[in-house]
Image 1 (cartoon, chains in turn orange, blue):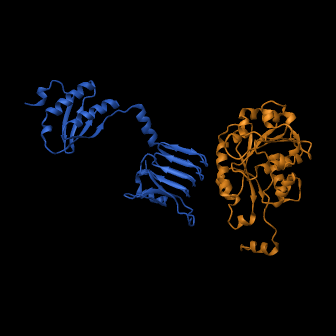
Image 2 (tube, rainbow over the protein chains, first blue to last red):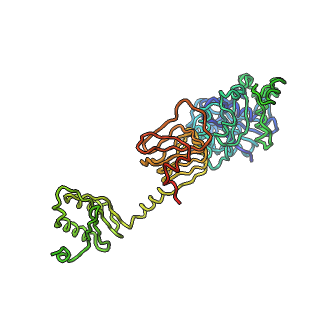
Length: 266
Length: 227
C-alpha cells in the first residue's frame, strides 16, 4: 500500500504542478512506482508539463462517474515504465467530482503504486477539498513572497484540521538568492519561522525549469540543472533519506570567500 | 406608635445608613409576601415625605434567587416610589449558568498552537497562547491576551468592552491591536524591531492604545497579579 501525497499551496502560480511533475519524475528515477493525479478540473496543466497531453482519452471525471475503469484513464509516461498519470477533465469544473469519489479513486491507486502524487488546484474551495480527500501526507509549496506565504499559512491551518493527513511539509520554490541576501525577499529561515512546519526542500529560480516545462520534459530529467538536483533531493527526503539542503550560493571566487572568512560583507 | 407593632409580619427590614437605605428582605417566605410588604412599607413611611433628595437603596436578598421577571417587578415597584433609586441588588446565590459564565470570564485558558491565517481563536476570560499568531490570524478574548510567541496578526482584548484589558507578546508585530472598541494599527514605516516582550494597554483617560515594555504593567495594571 503506497502513500498519497497532496501537493498544494493556496495561491496560484507558485509551482504546484511543476513540483508535482518533478517530484514524481524524481521518484520514478529512483525506481518507485508513481502515479500523478491532476485534480485541477477545468484548468488541467499537469499533462502539458509532462508532455502527455495528446494521449488523454479518459479523465478523472470519467472515472468518478464510472464511464470507464480507472486503469483505462491512466496514461503511461513516455520515459518511465513505472510512472503514470491520471489527467483532470478540461470541459467540466471542480464540482463535477465529490470528495468521497476522489477518496475512492486515490485508495484504489494506493493499492498499485508506491506514491500517488495529487496536484491540487489553487484556492480553498471544492477543488482543494477534493484534492485532499484521499491524501495521507501533504506538501505545501510557497515562494518567498508575502502573499504566497500568507496563503500557505492558511492552507496549513486547513490541513492541520484534517485528521487523516500527517503534518504538512514545506517546499520553498523560486528562490532568488541575490534578492534573499540583499533582504529584498523573505529568506527561507523567516518563512520557516512563520509557517512553523518542517522544510522538505528549497528550489532556486531557474530559467531552465520553464524551458523544460514548455517542452513537456520535467527538469528533474536533466542532471546538470540545479533545480533538478533540488527536486531529486526532495524525492530522496520523501523516501526517508537525510539529505542536506542545497546551497544556492553562486561560486564567487577566492577573494569573496576570504572576505567572508574575515566577516566582511562581500 | 411604631411600625413594628402595626405590622404583624416582618419580611422586610429597613435600615438607614449614611449611603442610603438597606432593605433587608426575608429569604424564606414567598416572593409575593415580600413585594406586598415592601410596597406597603415604602408607601406608608415618611420616606415619601423627604422632598427633593434621591435616596439610594441597596437590596439585600440573602439566599433568595430572583428570576429575571421577579427582578424586573421588584425594580419597577421601587422605582415607582418617589425619590428612590436602586444602587444594587445583593444576593448570596446565583444560577448555575451565571456561575459558569463568571468562572469562564475569570479563568485563563491556555492554548498551545499556531493561529494561522484565516483562523480565529476566541476565549471567554484571559488567553494564554503558547505559539504564534500569524498574519491574517485573529485572537480574541473577553479579558487579557498573553502571547508567548510572535503576535503578527490581530489581537482583540476586552472584546466585550473591558478597556482595562491588556495584550502582551514576546514579539509584538501585530497587524492590528484592539482593546474594547479601540483599534490601533502600527505605523506603515516599520522601525527597528525591538527584541523584547511588549504590552499594549489603554492609559487611564485616554482613547488610544499605547505599546510599551511588558514590565510597565506591574505599575499600570497591578490587578494582573492574582496571588
